[in-house]
Each structure stands twice: as C-alpha cells, then as structure tokens.
Amino acid sequence: MITFGLAITAVPNAGAGCRVNCVEYPYLDTLSEFPRDYLWMPPAMILVVLYVVLVASIHAQASPQKKVHGQIGLSFALIAAGVLLSDYFVQFSVVPISLMSEQTEGLALLTQYNLTGCS
Image 1 (cartoon, rainbow, N blue to C red):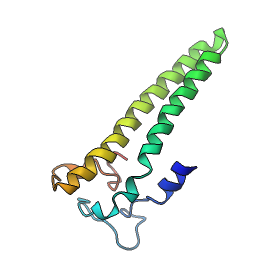
Image 2 (cartoon, one colour):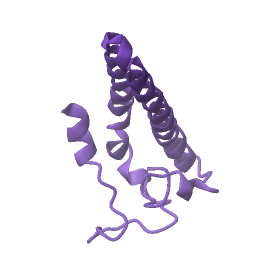
Image 3 (cartoon, rainbow, N blue to C red):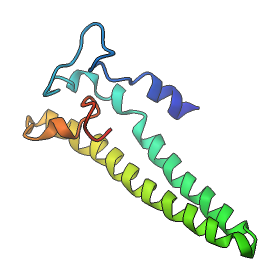
Image 4 (spheres, helix red, strand yellow):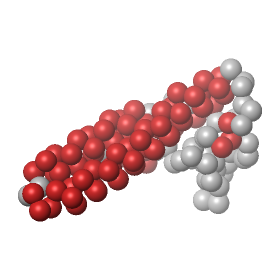
C-alpha cells in the first residue's frame, strides 16, 4: 500500500493526460520533480523480489504433476523481475544523476516521462 501510495502521487506530468505545467520532450526540466517522482521505485523493487519469492514458494508447494506449470510461472516471473528491476534501477539511479550533471544525451528514452520509453 505504501508503494502504491507513493506511485499514485508520482504520475508524470507529460503526455496527452497532462493539463497544466506539462513537461515537454526531451524532458530535461524534470529535475524539479526529484526525488518525489522517484520515491516509489525502491519499494517497488523490493516488491518485485518478493513476487519472485512468492512464485518460487508456489512452485515448491505444487504437486508433482503440476510442477511443470509452476516452473513455467517461475520462469516468466524471473524474466519480468529482471526487466522491471533493471528498468527501475536505471530510472532511479541513472536518470536523476545525469540530469544533475547535465549529461542529457539520449536520456529522453530512459525517463519515466517519456510515454514510449522505459516506463
């Protein structure tokens, strides 16, 4: 619930749903939103890891004839966790630091404000 509460307050003010004070491409003036817009990412990373633990536990408790289904579910959970963890890590650690040091080349693709980017 804490992660959801933090995430719901961090809706990027960009794109078609934005009405006022919208951030425009290439999203370089988003540093004013730091750290508020990024606070949900560390708890979300923890939840992703806990999700993998949950799916692994379900797989371990499955009956022998259903182990293959548990293995398939665990495989997809690991793939999803790898993608989400790498995405959240890049957005939390690389994007704000790059904005602070004004190294903005190619950053628009990685930021959560880009509707067609990583997020």
